[in-house]
Image (cartoon, rainbow, N blue to C red):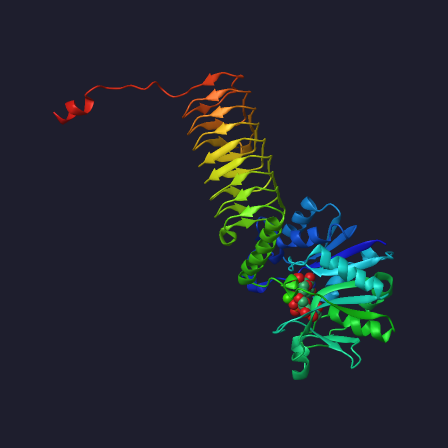
Length: 425
Ligand code: UD1
Ligand code: CA
C-alpha cells in the first residue's frame, strides 16, 4: 500500500530565539528536518512538508535534498489540524495511508515507525496515534482512555483538568491514518479550545463519533520523541544521537577510545578495526574503511570517503575528498576537494588550497598513487601530481607535476659562516 507523510514544520520555534527556522538548526551537519525526512525515506513514497516561518529557506533545503518531498505553505498558522489540512488538495484522490510527524523530532527511529505502522495494520485501525509514558508529562497532550483501556481522546495540557494532567501517557505527535476515512475530519475541526487553534488531536474524537477504529500505540523508548524547543534541547538531542551512533559503531567492531569527546554523525559508515581517537568530530555523510586510525583531534566535514588502512592524524581537517588505501595524512593538514591515491604520504602542515576568493570557485587537487608531499607544502588547486612524484618540503605547487619527478620550490639554503660572531663584534 502507498504510504505518504505529512511533516509539520511551519511553527515559529519562539524559544530557539533564532532568525532561522527551528527545523533548519543542525545536529552534526544535518538540519533537524533532514533527520525526520531520512527516517521516513524507506517507508513513504512521497512527503509533504508544511512550512510557514522561514518558508523560503526550508523549501530550499527540501527541494535540494529530497526530490520526493514537496513543501506546502501554511499562512497563517492556525494549529496542527489546520497545518495537516493544507495537504488535503494534494491528497484529494489518495487512497493509502498517511503518517503525520513533526519536523522538530529528529530522534524517532525508522524501526519504531515501522513497528507503529505494523501495529496500526494488525489492529485494522483507521487512525492510530503514537503515545509514550513520561514521569514528568508537562507540556504534552495527555492520552485519555476509557475504563476498558480503549482510546477516548487527547487533551492538551492547557485544556486539561487536574486529574487529566496527572496522566503520564502522552501524545507523541505521530499519527497513522487510513487517509480516505479520516480526510473528511479536516474540514470539520473547530477551534473551541484554550489556544483558539485547530487541534490535530481532535481527529480522535471525530473518528470515534464516526465509529471508526482508533487506537494508541505505546512506544518503548520515550527519548525518541524528544522534541526540540530550545537551544538546550538541541544540545541534549545531539548528545543522545551521538551516544546512539557511537554505541552502534562499537557493537560493530569500531574502537572509540573516548566516547565522551568523540562526535560522529548518523550518516557516517565506519569499517571494523578502525580506531577513533579522542576529540574527533565527524559531521555530514562519510565512509571510512577498515583498519584506519582517525584522530586524535581530527575533523571530517562530510563527503569524505576513505578506503582501508588510512591514517588521518592530529589536527587534520578533511572535506569532500576520496583517499585510497594505505595513505597517511598524519599531522596538521587540510585536505579539501581532493583525491588521494594509494600509499600517498602527506607531510605535516600540508594544505590543499582549494578556494579562490576572487572567483569564489573551489577546485580539485589530485594526488596519484605513491605521491609523497613534503612538510609544509601548499597544493594550489586545480592541480595534479602524477604517480610517484615527490614534492620537497615547503613546496608551493601551482602546476601539474609529472610522474616520478621531484618538485622543489624553495630557495637554496645559504649558510653565512661566523655571521653571528661578526654581528656581536
Ligand atoms: C502537539 C500536540 C500534543 C503533543 C505534542 C507532541 C496538538 C494540538 N497538540 O502539541 O498533543 O503532545 O505536539 O510534541 O497537536 N505546527 C505547524 N502549524 C501550526 C502549528 C504547529 O506546522 O499551525 C507545527 C510546529 O511547527 C511543530 C508541530 O506542528 O513542528 C507541533 O506544534 P506545537 O505547537 O509545537 O504543538 P504542541 O503544543 O507541542
Ligand atoms: Ca511543541
